[in-house]
Length: 130
Image 1: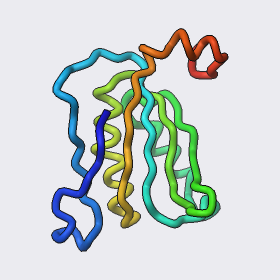
Image 2: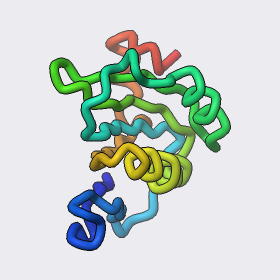
Image 3: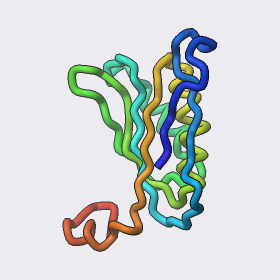
């Protein structure tokens, strides 16, 4: 799991400057799910998702994204699938951190091991497990 927290809020005008803390162990995971949410109030109809989708498709290891929009909050987020922990972390530290900075919002990120839960997900007919 990783978390994004402010390094020095006073230096960033109160906004979060993302820094990701990592677990000490190195894992070789082939299916990683990433949940991300940017704390901003942007109605989804105002999001240029077509252009964002084009840019995100260039990111290494990104297999899919499910867009999320907060009910009554208009936070913007997503549920992503990556082919490795390294690519998921790189995406969070790079693309997502920059998006949060541009929007002036704080970023919440969580990573999940999709390999360890494979059998349980197949038992529930998850679309992420064929």
